[in-house]
Image (cartoon, rainbow, N blue to C red; front, side):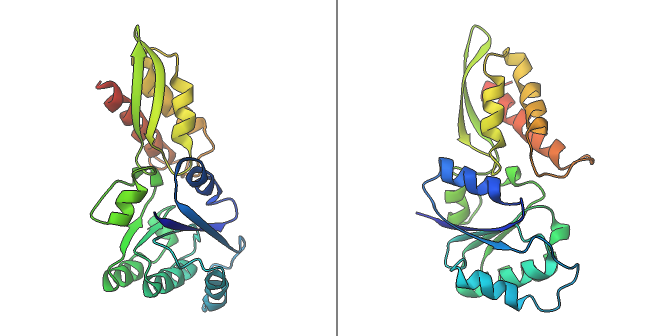
Length: 219
């Protein structure tokens, strides 16, 4: 069974921890980095040392919401050296040093995922990521209908923030043809942390959920 470590920063990471605790059998470890940080940190060693004291790097999968290139790179370095098999960095590539982190991941054979929206995570070649995405990642639904209405929605794979569970409840009782658009709207109303005000971010999350309903209904 997987051990998943989640590094939080302020409000970021809390919903993932709740989702993991609710729908997965994984062992979960948590730690935090300071919410208020300078734009540039020459030496992130002290912050990473505090994380190490929490045994956060003794895991199969590390998900870091550190959201700071200097800290994230230091976390990736120590995680890779410590034998972490997979790392997920949410909240867009501009929050990390992509070149550095990918180089370290390649050197230590770590499956590194840098995601703009975490509801796009799909299975791959890594056993760790595949076990994780058996529960969490790109939404997958099983929908039962009756007389053209949505009777029941079973969440087979949930977005990390838990929005899929919310969206599934919102479309029960709707007409089949209304459900795809309705879940997309529901996801945008859910307090998702994805970027707003651009064509990507929250709109990508909405589209992914809309497509999950269409696939389940074979539209």
